Length: 322
Image 1: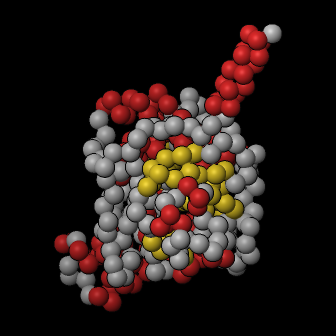
Image 2: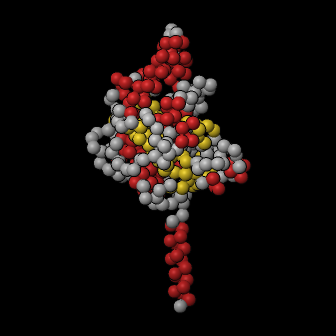
């Protein structure tokens, strides 16, 4: 009898621990460039196939330039996306460092745009304008002409998504046009600030939602910057996917005036016109990607943005005219 009780105890304990949050490697203070070993690890953890078969071959424009804060994780994200594309054949990646590729005639070649930590500089917070002012090839342009081109590129990007295409914003990407009300409306918010990087826990908002299947209803703990958003975020004009568990943050952060008062989501989807938006704040750290669950989540979110993974993307707030 005693052995039976002991056996049942360990069986129950096993079930308990198997449902715990997935462990990811401890985040290092110094982020080193991705090497072959790291990429191979990502490849071993990445999904073997796409969640849904693409309706047609998909081509994605990947832009990873930044004129403001330079995230050391940028090259890691590039490798993650390449692995997902190559291993699952869900999409093809085309990398670009040229803002001219945001013009409508170039965007017409793609099904979605992925913005990888595209932080802009203060005070304008407009990456297009930053590039037009800093690159030698635009030196002869007047300020008026630069502003007109920057405005045109923003309009082309919004029109691209509105027409039925997709956009994916990763971590600092939401900062690319941070002072633009139109861009905030499309993305579902703008970057406001973040307290210090720390361990935190993310909670799937709707465990049964197709884009959250990767987490099996479990929370996800990792080390990241707790991003706080403003502008259109206040309207909750999106469908939230991952919520930051405020109780998992340090005491000072929990009491920060910009943290308290409302739910803090760090990943969401939303329709924009006939198109689709997927924003995912995780992560500032490469260790967060050393997770089969996070890689599956990324893949599913991208397939949603491409229009291949159908799901409920109705917004929780008031849907605005676009």
